[in-house]
Amino acid sequence: MKLLNIIGRIYDEEILSRLSFLKGIKLFEGIKKRQLIHVLENLQERTYLKGETLFAQGDIGRALFIVFSGRIALSRLDPATQKSVVIAEVHPGEFFGEMALLEEMPRTATAYATEEARVFMLFKIKLESLLFARPNIGVVIAAQLAKILSARLRAIIEKP
Amino acid sequence: MSNGNTQKNYTQFLLPAFIGLALVYFAALAKGAIFPFILSAALAYILSPIIKYFEVRGIKRSYAVAGLYLGAGALVFTVVYLLLHFLSFELESLQQSWPAYAERMQQFVTNLNARLVKNYPFLVSLRMEQKLDHLLGLAPQFILSLLPMLTLLFIVPFITFFMLVGGSGIIDYLLDHLPARHAEIILHIASRIDGSLGNYLRGILTEAFVIFLIAFGCLLLLNLNYAAVIAILIGISSLVPYLGAIVGAVLSSIVSYLQFGAIMPIIKLLAFFTGIRFFDDWFLQPYIMKKAVDLNPAVILLALMAGAEIGGIWGVIFSIPVTCIIKEITQIAVELQETEFRWKPKPEPTRISIPYT
Image (cartoon, rainbow over all chains, first blue to last red; front, side, top):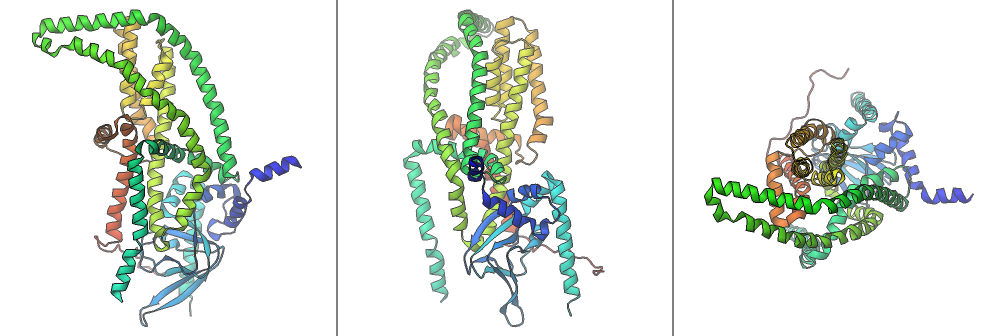
């Protein structure tokens, strides 16, 4: 019992919860839990307060965002009315901005926190180093990324 | 309205600018006191991946740091014990043979000088012997001036410990208080610099250690006296690009001349150090430093000379990492000018004519 207490004091429960959280992310589907440690090593964490902008439409994208807690709204400027329209709301476990991992192009929407949110950022440069240093993880992410983009494309085409 | 906005835009930079200026002023005033902290920050930066390795595997940071210090302490104790074991023999033999060596060295220099003066009489005006005497007189003073550096050996690990334990909290605080809109670009720049600089520092430390091991093994095989001392000096000087092999070649040639008094062992040693140089360039560096900043040898030389001019021996040690940062920042700045400030036309997205099927 005493030994368990000591191990409990040394062990960080938060890391375990983060790893379990990453296990549920579609982008990392197929990566073993012990391999997710290397993904976690390459993620950058940051808290955004309610109303803070993560990025604006037209900014050059450099990272993918995974929502850990809180909510993020994505809005786009309607060229006809010149008004900003909310196109989606991102909840914990979902991610956005994956185009930045493929090419450094301007963002197509603005992202802002609708409540205090904790997000993980995966930068293009970190994904590249993961691809070279741990190809078995990198290949899974790249394949998932392709699947997700294909699904988005299909959704646009099948839109009535 | 727009005037008000502009004023607001300027005033928001007042506090950070004031804090920045105050920090620079404080650093200029307390230059001496800050130096161990800079060294500690550099050491903490080099050690941080080891702490992160344990942290992401669920070990609390404070325990990971304590474990690292205990492990490093045990390792340092063992290495120092083994080195002292080797060195004590060597230092003892050096103590016994030093008078004979010193006499031979002095005789060698006197003979060389006499021969040179005989052939080239204008060399008398250079007064080489007096200059050598003056240099030998300065040696003890130089060794004494190195003593304060020893205190750094105790202070730096102490400060580093607290930086490693509490450092992540400060970094997290700063990250959370960056202007939200610019956090992505700032973190992108930081991760780029961290990528190349971290790889360079960790690469050069691994390289120095590998060179130390090879040099130690080969000098032992060649049966050269003071192999441990020379190998340590080669390892340390390998932290400065190109210096390791030069220091090794010069030192071991002198020791070899004094020990064997023949030219053949010197040729063998010179061939060995040329081999080390090529091995380093062709195998070690491409493997260890593959993801670090690629610096041109001319730039390295300029950086080393500028470092020596600005900060002496410490300037030389810090010159290459600082050059890495400058090179990465310059590259990022050019890229930002092209993408953010539209120096180049907007990049064209990849277009495919065949529709989605």
